[in-house]
Length: 464
Image (cartoon, rainbow, N blue to C red):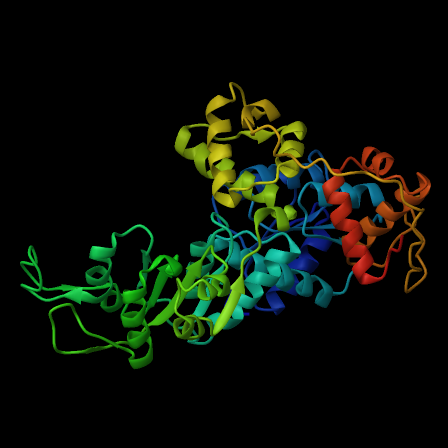
Protein backbone atom coordinates (compact mmCIF):
# COMPACT_ATOMS: atom_id res chain seq x y z
CA UNK A 1 0.00 0.00 0.00
CA UNK A 2 2.97 2.29 -0.44
CA UNK A 3 1.12 4.18 -3.17
CA UNK A 4 -0.92 5.93 -0.47
CA UNK A 5 0.77 9.08 0.74
CA UNK A 6 -2.03 10.39 2.98
CA UNK A 7 -2.70 8.79 6.38
CA UNK A 8 -5.98 7.38 7.71
CA UNK A 9 -7.69 9.22 10.56
CA UNK A 10 -9.11 6.88 13.22
CA UNK A 11 -11.62 8.31 15.73
CA UNK A 12 -12.42 5.88 18.56
CA UNK A 13 -12.97 6.55 22.29
CA UNK A 14 -12.24 2.95 23.34
CA UNK A 15 -8.44 2.85 23.85
CA UNK A 16 -8.23 -0.93 23.31
CA UNK A 17 -10.10 -0.84 20.00
CA UNK A 18 -8.23 2.30 18.94
CA UNK A 19 -4.96 0.48 19.49
CA UNK A 20 -6.22 -2.64 17.66
CA UNK A 21 -7.25 -0.61 14.61
CA UNK A 22 -3.88 1.14 14.69
CA UNK A 23 -2.11 -2.22 14.74
CA UNK A 24 -4.17 -3.40 11.75
CA UNK A 25 -3.24 -0.32 9.73
CA UNK A 26 0.40 -0.50 10.75
CA UNK A 27 0.68 -4.17 9.73
CA UNK A 28 -0.86 -3.22 6.37
CA UNK A 29 1.81 -0.58 5.88
CA UNK A 30 -0.62 2.31 6.27
CA UNK A 31 0.16 5.58 8.01
CA UNK A 32 -2.52 6.69 10.44
CA UNK A 33 -3.43 9.15 13.16
CA UNK A 34 -5.66 7.95 16.03
CA UNK A 35 -7.65 10.30 18.27
CA UNK A 36 -10.17 9.64 21.03
CA UNK A 37 -13.04 11.93 20.10
CA UNK A 38 -14.79 14.22 17.62
CA UNK A 39 -13.32 17.50 18.84
CA UNK A 40 -9.78 16.13 18.63
CA UNK A 41 -10.58 14.85 15.13
CA UNK A 42 -11.71 18.30 13.95
CA UNK A 43 -8.55 19.85 15.42
CA UNK A 44 -6.26 17.48 13.54
CA UNK A 45 -8.31 17.78 10.32
CA UNK A 46 -7.69 21.53 10.38
CA UNK A 47 -3.92 20.92 10.41
CA UNK A 48 -3.39 17.83 8.24
CA UNK A 49 -4.77 16.09 5.13
CA UNK A 50 -6.15 12.53 5.30
CA UNK A 51 -7.29 9.99 2.75
CA UNK A 52 -10.30 8.78 4.78
CA UNK A 53 -11.87 9.01 8.26
CA UNK A 54 -12.91 5.89 10.18
CA UNK A 55 -14.98 6.92 13.19
CA UNK A 56 -16.98 5.33 15.96
CA UNK A 57 -20.61 6.46 16.30
CA UNK A 58 -21.18 6.29 20.07
CA UNK A 59 -18.80 8.83 21.55
CA UNK A 60 -19.08 11.62 24.08
CA UNK A 61 -19.48 14.55 24.05
CA UNK A 62 -19.53 14.65 20.22
CA UNK A 63 -20.94 11.51 18.60
CA UNK A 64 -19.93 10.16 15.19
CA UNK A 65 -22.99 11.49 13.36
CA UNK A 66 -22.30 15.03 14.58
CA UNK A 67 -18.65 14.65 13.61
CA UNK A 68 -19.70 13.42 10.17
CA UNK A 69 -21.92 16.47 9.61
CA UNK A 70 -19.10 18.79 10.67
CA UNK A 71 -16.69 17.08 8.26
CA UNK A 72 -19.21 17.37 5.43
CA UNK A 73 -19.43 21.12 5.96
CA UNK A 74 -15.68 21.68 6.26
CA UNK A 75 -14.27 19.00 3.95
CA UNK A 76 -17.11 17.82 1.67
CA UNK A 77 -14.88 15.49 -0.38
CA UNK A 78 -13.31 13.56 2.51
CA UNK A 79 -14.71 9.99 2.73
CA UNK A 80 -16.05 8.88 6.14
CA UNK A 81 -16.81 5.30 7.24
CA UNK A 82 -18.67 4.92 10.54
CA UNK A 83 -18.32 2.04 13.04
CA UNK A 84 -20.89 0.95 15.60
CA UNK A 85 -21.72 -2.03 17.75
CA UNK A 86 -25.42 -1.24 17.45
CA UNK A 87 -27.17 -2.10 14.21
CA UNK A 88 -29.75 0.66 14.43
CA UNK A 89 -31.62 1.41 11.23
CA UNK A 90 -32.26 5.02 12.19
CA UNK A 91 -28.57 5.62 12.79
CA UNK A 92 -27.65 4.05 9.48
CA UNK A 93 -30.20 6.09 7.55
CA UNK A 94 -29.15 9.30 9.33
CA UNK A 95 -25.53 8.52 8.51
CA UNK A 96 -26.29 8.03 4.82
CA UNK A 97 -28.30 11.26 4.70
CA UNK A 98 -25.36 13.07 6.27
CA UNK A 99 -22.92 11.73 3.70
CA UNK A 100 -21.31 8.61 5.19
CA UNK A 101 -19.71 6.26 2.67
CA UNK A 102 -20.73 3.18 4.60
CA UNK A 103 -21.48 1.68 7.99
CA UNK A 104 -19.18 -0.96 9.54
CA UNK A 105 -20.75 -3.03 12.30
CA UNK A 106 -18.64 -4.23 15.22
CA UNK A 107 -17.10 -6.69 15.70
CA UNK A 108 -15.36 -6.78 12.32
CA UNK A 109 -12.37 -8.59 10.89
CA UNK A 110 -9.20 -6.59 10.11
CA UNK A 111 -9.55 -7.40 6.41
CA UNK A 112 -13.07 -5.97 6.41
CA UNK A 113 -11.75 -2.67 7.72
CA UNK A 114 -8.93 -2.60 5.17
CA UNK A 115 -11.39 -3.50 2.43
CA UNK A 116 -13.64 -0.56 3.27
CA UNK A 117 -10.69 1.81 3.42
CA UNK A 118 -9.39 0.63 0.05
CA UNK A 119 -12.83 0.81 -1.54
CA UNK A 120 -13.63 4.38 -0.58
CA UNK A 121 -10.13 5.78 -0.94
CA UNK A 122 -10.50 5.30 -4.68
CA UNK A 123 -13.16 7.96 -4.71
CA UNK A 124 -11.02 10.14 -2.49
CA UNK A 125 -8.09 10.01 -4.93
CA UNK A 126 -10.39 11.03 -7.74
CA UNK A 127 -11.72 13.94 -5.72
CA UNK A 128 -8.21 15.15 -4.95
CA UNK A 129 -7.97 15.63 -8.70
CA UNK A 130 -11.00 17.89 -8.77
CA UNK A 131 -13.88 15.46 -9.39
CA UNK A 132 -16.85 14.40 -7.31
CA UNK A 133 -18.45 11.05 -7.99
CA UNK A 134 -21.10 10.09 -5.45
CA UNK A 135 -23.73 8.93 -7.93
CA UNK A 136 -23.45 5.50 -9.53
CA UNK A 137 -23.60 7.01 -13.02
CA UNK A 138 -20.63 9.31 -12.41
CA UNK A 139 -18.66 6.59 -10.59
CA UNK A 140 -19.07 4.30 -13.60
CA UNK A 141 -18.03 7.09 -15.94
CA UNK A 142 -14.88 7.93 -13.97
CA UNK A 143 -14.02 4.24 -13.67
CA UNK A 144 -14.11 4.06 -17.47
CA UNK A 145 -12.04 7.24 -17.72
CA UNK A 146 -9.45 5.79 -15.33
CA UNK A 147 -9.15 2.66 -17.48
CA UNK A 148 -8.64 4.49 -20.75
CA UNK A 149 -6.15 6.80 -19.03
CA UNK A 150 -3.77 3.85 -18.76
CA UNK A 151 -3.56 3.72 -22.56
CA UNK A 152 -2.66 6.27 -25.22
CA UNK A 153 -5.96 5.88 -27.07
CA UNK A 154 -7.68 8.94 -28.50
CA UNK A 155 -10.75 9.80 -26.38
CA UNK A 156 -13.99 11.49 -27.47
CA UNK A 157 -15.95 13.07 -24.60
CA UNK A 158 -19.58 13.92 -25.30
CA UNK A 159 -22.23 15.53 -23.14
CA UNK A 160 -24.37 18.61 -22.66
CA UNK A 161 -22.80 22.02 -22.20
CA UNK A 162 -21.62 22.55 -18.64
CA UNK A 163 -21.36 18.88 -17.57
CA UNK A 164 -17.60 19.13 -16.93
CA UNK A 165 -15.98 17.68 -20.04
CA UNK A 166 -12.70 19.51 -19.39
CA UNK A 167 -12.69 18.20 -15.81
CA UNK A 168 -12.90 14.64 -17.14
CA UNK A 169 -10.21 15.37 -19.73
CA UNK A 170 -7.86 16.64 -17.00
CA UNK A 171 -8.69 13.58 -14.90
CA UNK A 172 -7.64 11.30 -17.79
CA UNK A 173 -4.41 13.26 -18.24
CA UNK A 174 -3.59 13.20 -14.51
CA UNK A 175 -4.09 9.44 -14.34
CA UNK A 176 -2.02 8.71 -17.45
CA UNK A 177 1.67 8.09 -18.06
CA UNK A 178 1.75 11.62 -19.54
CA UNK A 179 0.71 13.27 -16.27
CA UNK A 180 4.08 15.01 -15.88
CA UNK A 181 3.79 16.44 -19.39
CA UNK A 182 1.73 19.51 -20.38
CA UNK A 183 -2.05 19.60 -20.59
CA UNK A 184 -2.98 22.03 -23.37
CA UNK A 185 -6.61 22.95 -24.06
CA UNK A 186 -8.04 24.89 -26.99
CA UNK A 187 -11.68 25.81 -27.48
CA UNK A 188 -12.32 25.43 -31.20
CA UNK A 189 -15.52 27.48 -30.94
CA UNK A 190 -13.91 30.48 -29.22
CA UNK A 191 -11.21 31.26 -31.81
CA UNK A 192 -12.05 32.92 -35.16
CA UNK A 193 -11.68 30.65 -38.17
CA UNK A 194 -8.97 32.91 -39.59
CA UNK A 195 -6.78 32.40 -36.52
CA UNK A 196 -7.58 28.81 -35.63
CA UNK A 197 -5.13 27.18 -38.07
CA UNK A 198 -2.19 29.27 -36.89
CA UNK A 199 -3.20 28.71 -33.27
CA UNK A 200 -3.35 24.94 -33.70
CA UNK A 201 -0.39 24.33 -36.00
CA UNK A 202 1.84 27.33 -35.31
CA UNK A 203 3.49 29.54 -37.92
CA UNK A 204 6.86 30.63 -39.22
CA UNK A 205 8.17 34.19 -39.35
CA UNK A 206 6.65 36.07 -42.28
CA UNK A 207 3.92 33.48 -42.89
CA UNK A 208 1.32 36.26 -42.87
CA UNK A 209 1.07 39.94 -42.04
CA UNK A 210 2.00 40.42 -38.41
CA UNK A 211 3.97 37.17 -38.09
CA UNK A 212 7.15 38.86 -36.92
CA UNK A 213 8.58 35.71 -35.33
CA UNK A 214 8.02 31.96 -35.43
CA UNK A 215 5.43 30.60 -33.00
CA UNK A 216 4.75 26.95 -32.10
CA UNK A 217 1.08 25.93 -32.17
CA UNK A 218 -0.98 24.05 -29.61
CA UNK A 219 0.11 20.69 -31.02
CA UNK A 220 3.78 21.43 -30.40
CA UNK A 221 3.03 22.97 -27.00
CA UNK A 222 1.39 19.68 -25.94
CA UNK A 223 4.49 17.63 -26.84
CA UNK A 224 4.83 14.59 -24.49
CA UNK A 225 1.50 15.52 -22.92
CA UNK A 226 -2.20 15.83 -23.78
CA UNK A 227 -4.01 18.12 -26.22
CA UNK A 228 -7.69 18.83 -25.58
CA UNK A 229 -9.69 19.88 -28.66
CA UNK A 230 -12.74 21.35 -26.96
CA UNK A 231 -15.95 21.56 -29.05
CA UNK A 232 -14.20 20.03 -32.04
CA UNK A 233 -17.44 19.97 -34.09
CA UNK A 234 -17.23 23.77 -34.35
CA UNK A 235 -14.07 23.51 -36.47
CA UNK A 236 -14.52 24.59 -40.12
CA UNK A 237 -14.53 21.78 -42.70
CA UNK A 238 -11.34 22.96 -44.42
CA UNK A 239 -9.41 22.79 -41.18
CA UNK A 240 -10.92 19.41 -40.34
CA UNK A 241 -9.07 17.93 -43.35
CA UNK A 242 -5.75 19.31 -42.06
CA UNK A 243 -6.49 18.01 -38.56
CA UNK A 244 -7.19 14.55 -39.98
CA UNK A 245 -3.80 14.51 -41.68
CA UNK A 246 -2.05 15.53 -38.45
CA UNK A 247 -3.79 12.72 -36.56
CA UNK A 248 -2.92 10.18 -39.25
CA UNK A 249 0.71 11.17 -39.72
CA UNK A 250 1.43 12.19 -36.13
CA UNK A 251 3.30 15.23 -37.37
CA UNK A 252 2.45 18.89 -37.84
CA UNK A 253 3.67 21.50 -40.30
CA UNK A 254 3.57 25.15 -39.27
CA UNK A 255 1.80 27.72 -41.43
CA UNK A 256 4.42 29.01 -43.87
CA UNK A 257 6.79 26.19 -42.91
CA UNK A 258 8.14 23.28 -44.93
CA UNK A 259 9.64 21.09 -42.22
CA UNK A 260 7.23 18.71 -40.44
CA UNK A 261 7.51 18.36 -36.66
CA UNK A 262 7.00 14.85 -35.24
CA UNK A 263 4.40 14.68 -32.47
CA UNK A 264 4.24 12.56 -29.34
CA UNK A 265 0.92 13.60 -27.83
CA UNK A 266 -2.41 12.24 -26.66
CA UNK A 267 -5.57 13.68 -28.23
CA UNK A 268 -8.83 14.19 -26.31
CA UNK A 269 -11.75 15.79 -28.15
CA UNK A 270 -15.08 17.02 -26.79
CA UNK A 271 -18.44 17.95 -28.24
CA UNK A 272 -21.85 18.96 -26.89
CA UNK A 273 -23.44 17.97 -30.22
CA UNK A 274 -24.68 14.62 -31.39
CA UNK A 275 -21.61 13.76 -33.47
CA UNK A 276 -23.24 11.31 -35.85
CA UNK A 277 -25.99 13.82 -36.54
CA UNK A 278 -23.31 16.42 -37.40
CA UNK A 279 -21.76 13.89 -39.79
CA UNK A 280 -25.13 13.19 -41.39
CA UNK A 281 -25.74 16.92 -41.92
CA UNK A 282 -22.35 17.27 -43.57
CA UNK A 283 -20.88 19.73 -41.04
CA UNK A 284 -18.34 17.24 -39.70
CA UNK A 285 -16.14 14.85 -41.66
CA UNK A 286 -17.02 11.20 -41.24
CA UNK A 287 -13.39 10.05 -41.51
CA UNK A 288 -12.36 12.53 -38.80
CA UNK A 289 -15.21 11.36 -36.57
CA UNK A 290 -13.97 7.77 -36.72
CA UNK A 291 -10.40 8.93 -36.14
CA UNK A 292 -11.49 10.72 -32.94
CA UNK A 293 -14.08 8.19 -31.79
CA UNK A 294 -11.55 5.53 -30.74
CA UNK A 295 -12.77 5.47 -27.15
CA UNK A 296 -16.04 7.38 -26.60
CA UNK A 297 -17.03 8.46 -23.08
CA UNK A 298 -20.51 9.90 -22.56
CA UNK A 299 -20.68 12.26 -19.57
CA UNK A 300 -24.13 12.17 -17.94
CA UNK A 301 -25.98 15.41 -17.30
CA UNK A 302 -26.33 16.59 -13.72
CA UNK A 303 -30.02 15.60 -13.62
CA UNK A 304 -28.93 12.05 -14.58
CA UNK A 305 -26.67 11.81 -11.53
CA UNK A 306 -28.84 13.34 -8.78
CA UNK A 307 -26.70 12.05 -5.91
CA UNK A 308 -23.88 14.35 -7.09
CA UNK A 309 -25.93 17.54 -6.78
CA UNK A 310 -25.55 18.23 -3.06
CA UNK A 311 -21.87 17.17 -2.77
CA UNK A 312 -20.99 19.42 -5.72
CA UNK A 313 -23.06 22.26 -4.25
CA UNK A 314 -21.23 21.93 -0.92
CA UNK A 315 -17.90 21.88 -2.75
CA UNK A 316 -18.68 25.18 -4.47
CA UNK A 317 -20.02 26.59 -1.21
CA UNK A 318 -16.69 25.85 0.50
CA UNK A 319 -14.52 26.88 -2.46
CA UNK A 320 -16.21 30.20 -3.16
CA UNK A 321 -16.99 30.77 0.51
CA UNK A 322 -13.27 31.13 1.16
CA UNK A 323 -12.91 33.48 -1.81
CA UNK A 324 -15.90 35.63 -0.77
CA UNK A 325 -15.01 35.66 2.92
CA UNK A 326 -18.11 33.54 3.72
CA UNK A 327 -16.49 30.43 5.21
CA UNK A 328 -18.58 28.18 7.46
CA UNK A 329 -21.81 28.56 5.47
CA UNK A 330 -24.37 25.74 5.56
CA UNK A 331 -27.37 24.72 3.47
CA UNK A 332 -30.83 24.57 5.04
CA UNK A 333 -33.00 21.52 4.46
CA UNK A 334 -35.29 23.61 2.26
CA UNK A 335 -32.32 24.74 0.15
CA UNK A 336 -31.11 21.15 -0.24
CA UNK A 337 -34.59 20.11 -1.33
CA UNK A 338 -34.73 22.94 -3.88
CA UNK A 339 -31.33 21.99 -5.29
CA UNK A 340 -32.30 18.35 -5.76
CA UNK A 341 -35.68 19.20 -7.34
CA UNK A 342 -34.25 21.61 -9.90
CA UNK A 343 -33.58 20.09 -13.36
CA UNK A 344 -30.25 21.94 -14.01
CA UNK A 345 -30.39 22.66 -17.74
CA UNK A 346 -26.99 24.37 -17.41
CA UNK A 347 -25.54 21.41 -15.49
CA UNK A 348 -22.53 21.84 -13.17
CA UNK A 349 -21.66 25.27 -14.57
CA UNK A 350 -25.12 26.54 -13.64
CA UNK A 351 -24.88 24.97 -10.17
CA UNK A 352 -21.61 26.78 -9.54
CA UNK A 353 -23.20 30.10 -10.54
CA UNK A 354 -26.18 29.46 -8.27
CA UNK A 355 -23.97 28.73 -5.25
CA UNK A 356 -21.90 31.86 -5.82
CA UNK A 357 -25.08 33.90 -6.01
CA UNK A 358 -26.46 32.31 -2.83
CA UNK A 359 -23.26 33.06 -0.91
CA UNK A 360 -23.65 36.72 -1.82
CA UNK A 361 -27.38 36.94 -1.05
CA UNK A 362 -27.48 35.00 2.25
CA UNK A 363 -27.24 37.52 5.13
CA UNK A 364 -26.37 34.95 7.79
CA UNK A 365 -24.50 31.65 7.98
CA UNK A 366 -27.31 29.56 6.48
CA UNK A 367 -28.32 29.48 2.81
CA UNK A 368 -32.10 29.23 2.46
CA UNK A 369 -34.05 28.17 -0.64
CA UNK A 370 -34.87 31.80 -1.50
CA UNK A 371 -31.17 32.72 -1.63
CA UNK A 372 -30.66 30.25 -4.50
CA UNK A 373 -32.91 32.34 -6.74
CA UNK A 374 -33.67 29.38 -8.99
CA UNK A 375 -35.77 30.05 -12.12
CA UNK A 376 -39.45 29.25 -11.77
CA UNK A 377 -40.87 26.42 -13.83
CA UNK A 378 -37.61 24.45 -13.92
CA UNK A 379 -38.25 22.26 -10.90
CA UNK A 380 -39.22 18.65 -11.20
CA UNK A 381 -42.81 17.99 -10.17
CA UNK A 382 -43.28 14.31 -10.89
CA UNK A 383 -46.50 12.46 -10.52
CA UNK A 384 -46.66 10.49 -7.32
CA UNK A 385 -48.87 7.50 -8.04
CA UNK A 386 -49.73 5.01 -5.39
CA UNK A 387 -48.20 1.64 -6.07
CA UNK A 388 -48.87 -1.80 -4.65
CA UNK A 389 -46.98 -2.52 -1.48
CA UNK A 390 -43.53 -3.84 -2.36
CA UNK A 391 -42.41 -7.32 -1.49
CA UNK A 392 -38.86 -7.10 -0.20
CA UNK A 393 -36.58 -9.96 -1.11
CA UNK A 394 -35.65 -12.17 1.81
CA UNK A 395 -32.25 -11.55 3.30
CA UNK A 396 -29.51 -13.96 2.37
CA UNK A 397 -28.77 -14.70 6.04
CA UNK A 398 -30.81 -14.48 9.28
CA UNK A 399 -30.56 -11.31 11.30
CA UNK A 400 -28.36 -11.38 14.39
CA UNK A 401 -29.42 -10.43 17.90
CA UNK A 402 -28.77 -6.81 18.74
CA UNK A 403 -26.57 -5.80 21.62
CA UNK A 404 -29.12 -3.28 22.92
CA UNK A 405 -32.62 -4.23 23.96
CA UNK A 406 -35.21 -2.63 21.78
CA UNK A 407 -32.89 -2.01 18.85
CA UNK A 408 -34.02 -2.88 15.33
CA UNK A 409 -32.95 -6.27 13.98
CA UNK A 410 -29.38 -6.23 12.76
CA UNK A 411 -28.60 -6.53 9.09
CA UNK A 412 -25.61 -8.42 7.86
CA UNK A 413 -22.56 -6.48 9.03
CA UNK A 414 -20.74 -4.26 6.68
CA UNK A 415 -23.05 -2.38 4.35
CA UNK A 416 -25.32 0.45 5.35
CA UNK A 417 -26.91 0.38 1.91
CA UNK A 418 -28.52 -2.96 2.82
CA UNK A 419 -29.87 -1.44 6.02
CA UNK A 420 -31.12 1.64 4.18
CA UNK A 421 -32.81 -0.51 1.51
CA UNK A 422 -34.65 -2.65 4.05
CA UNK A 423 -35.79 0.46 5.92
CA UNK A 424 -37.10 2.19 2.78
CA UNK A 425 -38.96 -0.90 1.58
CA UNK A 426 -40.38 -1.49 5.06
CA UNK A 427 -41.73 2.07 5.25
CA UNK A 428 -43.15 1.81 1.73
CA UNK A 429 -44.95 -1.40 2.68
CA UNK A 430 -46.32 0.18 5.88
CA UNK A 431 -47.94 3.03 3.91
CA UNK A 432 -49.49 0.66 1.40
CA UNK A 433 -47.14 1.61 -1.44
CA UNK A 434 -47.92 5.34 -1.36
CA UNK A 435 -44.78 7.16 -2.42
CA UNK A 436 -46.20 10.45 -1.18
CA UNK A 437 -46.60 9.11 2.36
CA UNK A 438 -43.28 7.26 2.16
CA UNK A 439 -41.23 10.37 1.36
CA UNK A 440 -42.91 12.19 4.27
CA UNK A 441 -41.91 9.44 6.69
CA UNK A 442 -38.42 8.96 5.27
CA UNK A 443 -37.63 12.67 5.02
CA UNK A 444 -36.28 12.36 1.46
CA UNK A 445 -37.34 13.84 -1.88
CA UNK A 446 -39.65 12.08 -4.33
CA UNK A 447 -36.85 12.15 -6.85
CA UNK A 448 -34.47 10.34 -4.50
CA UNK A 449 -37.11 7.73 -3.63
CA UNK A 450 -37.79 7.08 -7.29
CA UNK A 451 -34.05 6.73 -7.94
CA UNK A 452 -33.69 4.28 -5.04
CA UNK A 453 -36.67 2.16 -6.14
CA UNK A 454 -35.31 1.97 -9.66
CA UNK A 455 -31.98 0.81 -8.22
CA UNK A 456 -33.73 -1.85 -6.09
CA UNK A 457 -35.90 -2.94 -9.04
CA UNK A 458 -32.84 -3.51 -11.24
CA UNK A 459 -31.16 -5.47 -8.45
CA UNK A 460 -34.24 -7.67 -7.95
CA UNK A 461 -35.17 -6.39 -4.49
CA UNK A 462 -38.36 -4.61 -5.47
CA UNK A 463 -41.28 -5.20 -7.82
CA UNK A 464 -44.44 -3.19 -8.30
